[in-house]
Length: 229
Ligand code: ADP
Ligand code: ADP
Image (tube, rainbow, N blue to C red):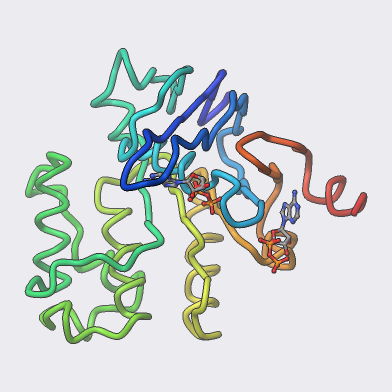
């Protein structure tokens, strides 16, 4: 059973503002098993964020097929979007929203009925309960990351995607993130993450795909893959 199936995925960004067109993904095939913690590794510019943003429905693909939890993105866009939650890399948050309000808005966007909303539980999970009523503009970078993780969990997705979740974060937040990833995975959530840190991938991931110049150049269990380096 695969959580994600990607076939022949291509993305070309159109030329603009003096920059030439850029082929960021050159025909990616990738299957990510349900229940795994899966790492996407690769140098800057390899295409990791593009891939994740396509999964999240934030970037429109040029060609290929993406299936999330059995739902083809083109055939069942709503169900495929509902199956995945993404913690983005950018710390973009509405400055005048409190964490509690941000979660309510997110729940509304995903059509989560009021009776099924669990804002307090999610805020506790990410360690934001004391900041529930603080404006986002007053939150530190670490607190903003916690809120972004919380937002990704609001609709209880089957698949959680984390884009460089630990880039430049302190040890406490890093541990909080990894504890949450482990716990969510133990509860059955499939987790996909990108990272620059090999040690982190080694510790966290069951399987790894290495992406370079828009192509998957290697894919194996973490032990096999890193054993070969
Ligand atoms: P740096 O070499 O400064 O760490 P890079 O962007 O070259 O920056 O690579 C970042 C990290 O990505 C590397 O340290 C390595 O762990 C990882 N990586 C994953 N896939 C590759 C690859 N195909 N080639 C090189 N590095 C890779
Ligand atoms: P990674 O996440 O591995 O660093 P990205 O997916 O961000 O890689 O980028 C892949 C390539 O696509 C890079 O050459 C990058 O400059 C280019 N790219 C990314 N986003 C855009 C965009 N919005 N417009 C044009 N080119 C882009």
